Image (cartoon, rainbow, N blue to C red):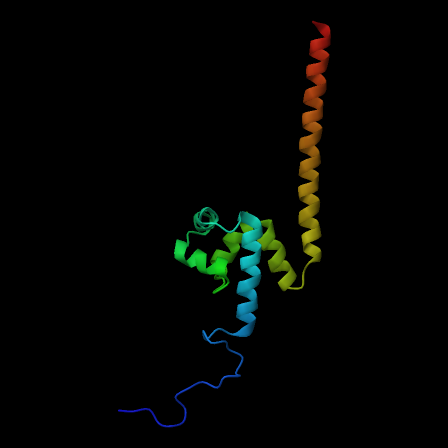
Length: 132
């Protein structure tokens, strides 16, 4: 059986690239790849860290880093749980950048609380040394 002369190839300009990937999907994959590289670096150790976060196969994670494919929903949730860079990228792609302000405020509050704790600890050690 042979293919008919017409219809055996997809049109070149149909919204898909040569790998059969839709253009919006490609943008998603590239943005997540950039966020992953910012978060853990672009090394095999980074891929192993991300694989441990998500439970995904290491080859799958390497495809995410390469921007070849993007993570599925459950893997994206795991990435967002561990990486503020991925969270920020996801919120930006969803047009919800203002939510990232709240995340940054919480992180700043935590950093200030830790700094105050360290200052108080240093201050109490100085008082103890002054008494001896």
